[in-house]
Amino acid sequence: MSDQISDFDNVQTRPQPRKLSRTNPQEVILDTAAHLFYAHGIHTVGMDELIQETSLSKMSVYHLFPGKAESVVAYLRCTSAQVLEMAVCTPVPPFSALTGRLLTGVAWLSRSLTHIS
Image (tube, rainbow, N blue to C red; front, side):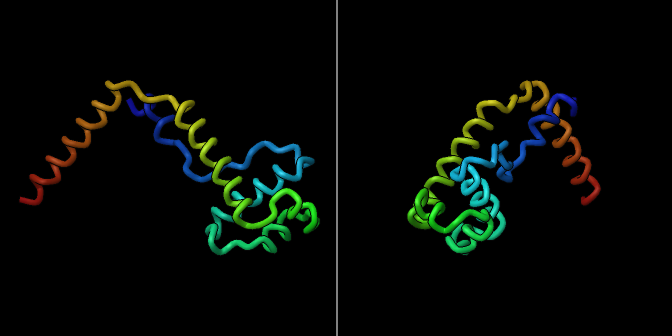
């Protein structure tokens, strides 16, 4: 029964790096932004840190994203698209597997409660 739901249990919440050509500066910036925003939080990462991590010129980065707000909006659009794709593509376990897991949990809980009283 646990094999039936292993794919569902292993859904990752951390943004995964996209397969990049590394020649498209916008993809490089967005991938780097995803990494930095996840690691440090959106509010703490500045444009200078983003530019330094991408190894792109300041002019290239500011040409694509005139400010932090534009880079955050682009990041959130990409992230929401990835989350939507993950939600649509993640196989849902059969109802019987969920029911079996729920019954196993109830049995464990009832055994635990009998040991307490």
